[in-house]
Image 1: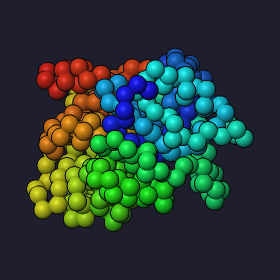
Image 2: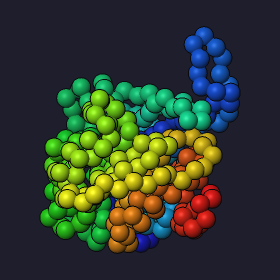
Image 3: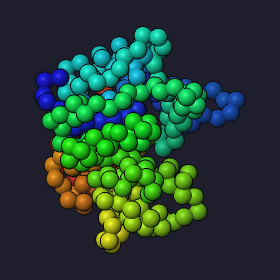
Length: 303
């Protein structure tokens, strides 16, 4: 890493085994041909780090403990890139956290052992350290690691560093103090079933100090702040190759927007353009959106 980190990221850093199928999604009792497969950095934080460095942002990240199978791939992938891995804890007694994702166009199915890991009662992620935020001007905090996620957010508050979070509920501290909370369609379907997107946003806006963005896959995005009217924006239209990493890329775009002082409309549009480029290619870690591509999509509407 040659540049001082501008962004601090805390959360899921995985090794992702991805399989792009040739002729549609898996069907019971039917053979499926694998068109492409990869083992690359993944997780909400790992993917965001990859995208941010491609956009020209230097990153420091921490979170999931890195095991013996994930470590060589991770170190090799980020060698020569402006992603500081020094806060990560590398273990010698397990292969590390991995997931497996089957993809065919708009459909994807992730598999892993996260329920088992979280149910173990053991911590398999780092405790954020204040010194790791030195020099950083924006951050992203995944909500999955309980007290440690809250500590990361509290350290950001203490340092006056605005942070982006994802899928944090309207009554959570992570949401309340975030500069941006990006809430996915998957989150609202699971935790706000039977409630309209507009009603979800009303709850979110009432409790937020910052901006709430509700994404709806290919549908219209809703966004707004407390005491302000609800705003809407259509996502960019692109040919979808894989949706893996779309939300993580959107989060990265929001961090970039904070770093560059974008207003709400420009930030949402920039993050949406990043995500649109991400879903138009596979695998994302090898082909992350570049800044010139994002700006061109915003300017022309064409990827």
